[in-house]
Image (cartoon, rainbow over all chains, first blue to last red; front, side):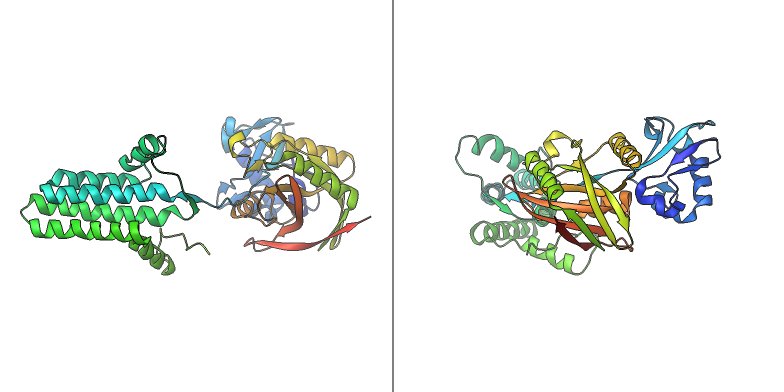
Length: 238
Length: 146
C-alpha cells in the first residue's frame, strides 16, 4: 500500500506519526483515506473540497500539479508526501508618481478647454477614452504614454514619487470618463447645454486637483470604503 | 510559548540574512519542543526561489528543499520547528502575504522568525506563531541565551 509522509507542522494531527500507510488508487482516494484515519488533518489540507493553495502533494519527486492532480494514479509502494509551501514577504508601500497624475490633469484641462472653444465633441470623447484607459491602468493610456515617453525622457518634468493608493485615483478617472462619455452623447443628441455643463464639471474638478491637490473622486472613494462597499478596499494611508 | 535562541545561533541567522540583503533571505529552524517551550538548536539557510526581480520583497523555498531539510532534521532527531526570513528595510512584523502563507500552508504548529534588515544590518528579530483561529499571529517571547 502507498504511504504518505506527513510534514512536521501537521504531525500533531496524526498522533505524531511522520509516515501513514493509506489505501487508494489515486491521490484523491489516498488523501480521503488519510483524512478518514485522521479527521483533524482535513481542514489543514483542504479548503472545502479543494487542496489549500500552499499545500503540495508529491509522488516521489514529482509534484502532482504536473501529473494528473488529485486524479494522479497511485500504486502500492508509492511514497507520497505532503509538503507545505514556505513563503513570505514584506508589505511594500506603494508609491505613485504624482507628476504623472498632474500631466493627466493638465492634459484633461487643456483638451477639454480646446474642445469647448472649438465645439469639438470628438475631443471630449478622446479625453473620456484616455481617462477610461487610465482608470483601467492600461499600458496604452494616452496621457501616461505622453508622460513616460515624451515628457519624462526629455526631463520637461521630474518624477515625484509619493506614498499613495492608486485605486482612488483610478476611480476618479473612471468617474471623469463617465462624465465625458455622457457629455459626448449629449452633444451628439442635441443636448448641447447639458453636454458642456458636464465637460465644465470635469474641467473644474481637474483644476481643483491640479492646483489644490484635492481629488474629489478620491474623497468619494474613501467614503465608499468607509461604508464597506465591495470593491472599495483601500483605506486612506495613515 | 517562549523560544530559547542561543546567541551564537542568533548571530549566524542574522549574518545569513544580512548577506542576503537587499533581498529577502530565509531558512529553516530546528530544535526541540517541550510543552510551552521551544529550544532552537540549528538553522539551515535555503536559497530564495522567488523570481529574482521580486526577491526584494518576496521569499520562497521549493517543496523539494523543504523535503530535503525535513528529512535531514528527522535523521538528526531534531524537530523542524519553523523557519526564518528577513524584511529588508521593513519592520519585523508579519505581512498580509506572510499571514496568507501561514493560513494556507504551514498552519499553527510552525514558528516564524522575522528579522528587519536595514541597509545590510539586522536591527530587530521577532518570533511568531499563527493563532489557532488563523486570523493573525501571536508574538512569542524570544529569549537569547548563552
